[in-house]
Length: 458
Image 1 (tube, rainbow, N blue to C red):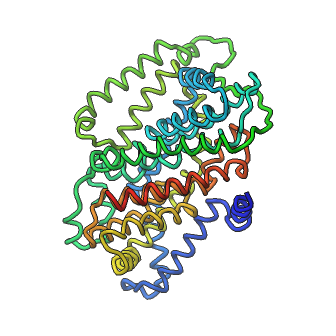
Image 2 (cartoon, one colour):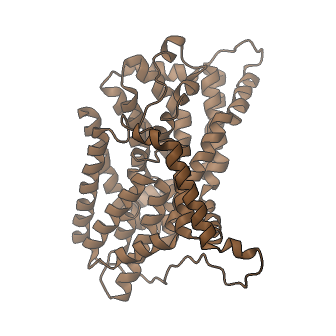
Image 3 (tube, rainbow, N blue to C red):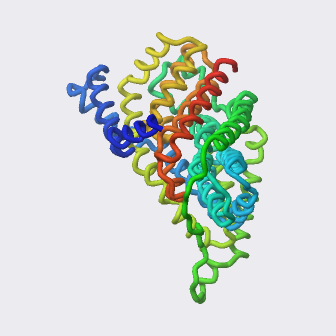
């Protein structure tokens, strides 16, 4: 517990807000580019670097990427706030009899949901943990509530290896990797880059599914063991409820907002269009952000039944996207500096000089885990670290899918240490970071062991 308190103190004392960290990283990148890269002809190299930064901030392709990531988070959250999913959560919570059964139920369902969509998994796990606590409280079931809360957060240690993972879903877009590396890699390297890397080589590859399956078994077993060695805790919870229906007198066109026929009908049109437009992509396992968001939009409207409920849920869910909205352009600016100044090549050359085919994925895993502490966003991390990994992998002959998944694994595992994405869960469960951190740290060590072994064997 002393280690947990130390980590929490270090985060509070020495780690400012993610936005401030993005600013500090920007300033550091500008300084490093000014000192370690050469001018392209401009007499004032720092002004040239600032020009690279400005171009990166407003990179159109990356701004589209930011919006795609915002929608993935918002629509996943909106799905959880629907009445059918809430009914499912309440139904599941009634199956717990003690802490052991609670942590197994919460962790397994949370990881499955996070594999489908990380926003869905994050909020689903938080609300399920809260409802389990409420059910235990009403029925006088002794429960270690912080351990249950930690179980509701484990989806964030598998999300980047799932369907909504930022890096795998972007490289599935036709032409993304080549456009990503333009102006960085030589023509020889560019010619080695595939048009896209579909999910059959990353998310749905046999080795990634094996690693996910191992964690799906191992994490609940570890949590069950912890449940048997820890004591129940005292907690007081009021019923958590999200009401989408407004109590108002409807007149005229207002009825359209509450029309289930119009809402479900439009949602059905969206899903019908999705099937027609993306059926071949589904067969080829080429799942892209646009494709995922289109499906979730149609499904969310159907589950909420009318536009009013859907929009109220969107208003609630969109609060969690502020970090993406304002921080992503700063990450894009950092990438712009690294790309146009030549820093990507310098860093990748360093990795090439110290790594080989076997060790590069391990270096990538650990460096991604470290970067995630300072850049707590898979999408932002892909923007900054992605070009370095692609360049290094191609130079050393490491398969791109393996290198990309090594970044994904490293990024997601230190979410068990970095409490940034735990904030929504803490708000819903009324727990504190120091209460769940002892357990998530243990799970992080379990995940590190599984992923390193997987990268070495597969």
